[in-house]
Image (cartoon, rainbow, N blue to C red; front, side, top):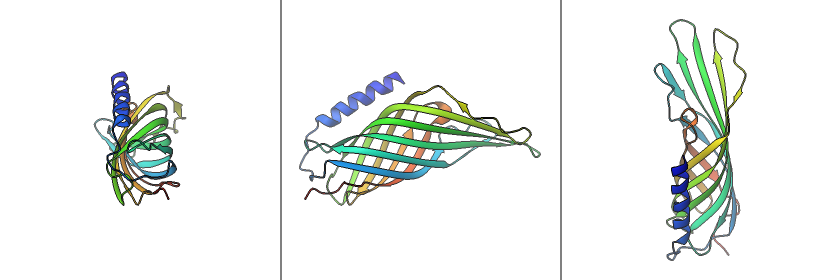
Length: 193
């Protein structure tokens, strides 16, 4: 995880050093709430089936004038579950929730245009919670796991400088890693008048 954090930091420095290359000027600040679905990257082992969960996010971004790059801070809450159906009436479900706070950066390939693809990365901290329920026994109480790091590579496209479609991966721990499909709307974004 430490090597990934170092690579992400080098990538952020490289992206902010790149010239603007005749890209359109946009407003400096924007805030984006987003909503989506997350799928677990790890299925839980033999007999388990992954199930999608809700993903919510709120991100504030500052758009640099000197380069087609934004730097921001994102708060994200995501969930994914795994279910194991046994022969008979027994079943077990594991629900893994992650709350993360990350510093983010995106590089835009056509900033200011009607369609602007982007790639980005986020690095931060994550708190993980697990709930295990078994049909034979009472549902186990939530278990709070130690906080850890999170790496969030992402790609997406921004339409009309406001509507964003994003695919990201939240990599924090094997049982909590997810791929998320999100839709968001950037308030305050758009072309500068």
